[in-house]
Length: 384
Ligand code: GTP
Ligand code: MG
Image 1 (cartoon, rainbow, N blue to C red):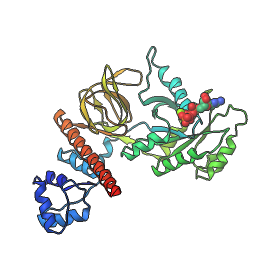
Image 2: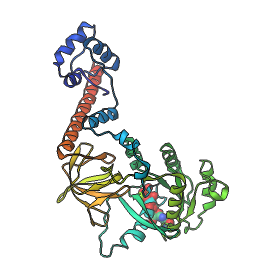
Image 3: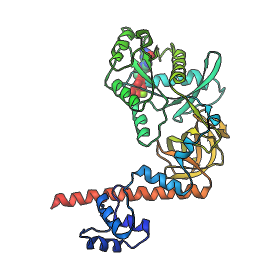
Image 4: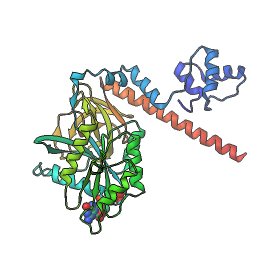
């Protein structure tokens, strides 16, 4: 790993760190056991002691860790038999410039669609929710990530959790394309996520939806009326105007551009959407299942948090026994709080989940120490 030291290596190959310091010294390199070394130095050392030493990224290291427990993220994904794959709902993120109406839109969608079904149900924010939309007479689900803005989007991507299938770009018709509109477009493009444009606030005087269409052509988002293939829907998040049409557009875009299928009959895997410590219930994490089906009783590990799923709740507080692909659920039973974006997997046994979590914790700690050492040595350099 980046920043690795002779101590780290000594631990991995089970030798005394002092011995490695000595070997390196004889090779003409002075280093302490706790000093970060570069790949070239490790290579020279490796040749001498008969090990092939590579510096791997944190991701690769984690992959290797999982392989030690017979969990192979890649092969399982690729080996999916076509007949095992079943359609799954699209996962949607709402993006756009400050004050253009992202939160209002998410609230409107949620109110008109979720809580209404659950008489007496107390809805709570769990970071994600599902709505049902009728498309050509067929009920279809859409999963919304309830954390608007690209911060959440980029943080998750940085952690390797590609959650979003479709992005709704909210642009206020009385304000037009603004810096964060462009930023959002760039993020979605980088992630190869199709965009549906919600031209919002059409109820406001001076709203000019046509101008927004014109502006966005510059960024490759050309509406169907203009001969392009991006769906634009004029809405008022405040009044609820055309919000149903927007949801239809999301489904049509997903159907046209994406092949959204997953195997529900395997161990669940997905990502943490948000997590916190609750006084009464302990660690509470909202996870999005991406593949497989998560069950109450499953042993899971998310980042360096682990535990057994004690209970699962949907956004209406309703208990669930299982959750399939694209379903967001609140999970109780983790022993600590994972970080948003942490990938979760089901482990074959409680013990495996704990061991993976503990190894990750140790790796994170070592990386932290390496960073601190670097800072300290830079500071000493400056002082001299
Ligand atoms: P940030 O979270 O700050 O980035 O803003 P946002 O994009 O979430 O905007 P938000 O939903 O908070 O809306 C900003 C303001 O615009 C609020 O006062 C909303 O009530 C108002 N607003 C949102 N949508 C509409 C709309 O369709 N019509 C009108 N008239 N006002 C709207
Ligand atoms: Mg907001």
